[in-house]
Image (cartoon, rainbow, N blue to C red; front, side, top):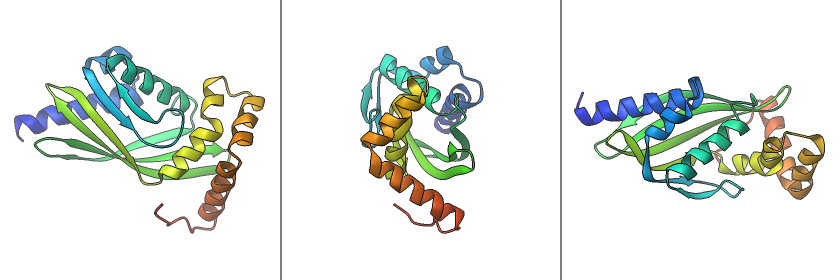
Length: 181
């Protein structure tokens, strides 16, 4: 194993451990470069470029509050891939929309790592529209405490997101959710 691959492996192990296994924000911040840029995809309130260590740590803290802390996101590091310039994390996950209503997903995180720190990151979702729908319907409400009236606002302002999500769940229950979107 080359020193470069060892560096990237160590980075990905620390990254995953700090975010999913045993949350450690101080350690996570130490593997984020001061001028890091995270390109977060989609069409929702977290989409866009997050620049600088403080902004990146804040993004990940928000994501953690939205998913793993609430039990609505259950992730698994499926595999890793390395090259001279980048490393990738292949992730499989489940989003729990409601009791008995789960949606499986896949994503690839592409990292540029220098001196053991993330300098740039791109997230590529298999079904970005599904993620947009989930975040638009309930993301802000979950951050506000998940009150029913707040969840209702998300659904009221994004009624097509609810329709698409219910269709996805129906396809999953019928065993027909093989579409790549």
